[in-house]
Length: 236
Image 1 (cartoon, rainbow, N blue to C red):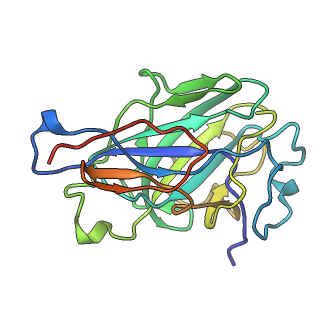
Image 2: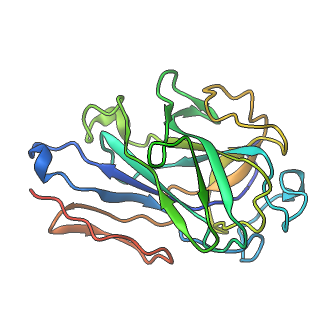
């Protein structure tokens, strides 16, 4: 049974839509975002289980464990970028083992879809307090047509490893989609496409909490966000 659990770190998804326009006219647009809140456990969360099994100390935060957050993009594209935030943290947080793949069900991924994510061509990134970072573009080879019927309702799984104690965590208290986390001290598990490293759903992430995408200059869908978003345009 899926527990009502919560998302601990904010992720901003940006995709490069595959359209009939030339490559020069393609632009990055926001596809998924959750507002940054915190530090954990500050907020008014939805019904949640006791999180002490995953985070024994809110002050210590996450410790040598892997998050697998499940998100539903508002727009698909052949490339994706991620933004990780430490805006409410009080110490630097190091992320490594970052991956993005197509969810099959629960924490399991469709085989062959899990792609490594880099930051300025590095496998890890340290985010200072009150800061955010963008990843390099990541190819999604399974996205051949951004409007394909087989992508409707599908979700991405974003995995990342917190290398040591994170300290106070930035999170989102009102997430509604079940995500997953490995136990403290379990190491980097993001490369795995099966569910063995995530025996119990422990986080609640939302693919619909907040999103903003711009398909064409005249078509804007948005909702209020506590996270500052870039302006993006697409040529028809």
